[in-house]
Length: 128
Figure: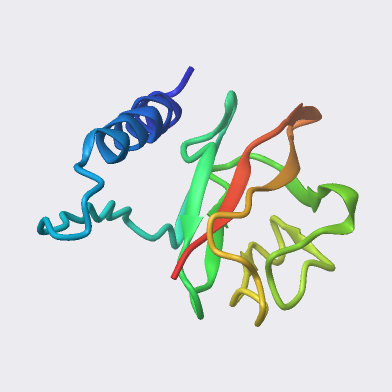
């Protein structure tokens, strides 16, 4: 399990438990928690997949896959693409974006990337 997935797996339940522990009385002052995530603009292609298996993409941002000498091709599963165009994302055309209007923040978009003939299954997660 990658570091990013472990942090997401730990942070999600931790925030939920923290929110459940907050007082429920309307007369008391409320506390809010903000989770800030760095927007991904580059994803490095490696022999064992990509360096960002869970890439958080900000609104109106493009993402470029860096081939690092590998042959690759990206395809979004179930025809659900978060970008304006996903017709061809590969070594020759490595940039996608920006995200489509109406894409829901936090929705997970599964994609397959074929690297040197091997298939990997990372994710794109649009944000605000």
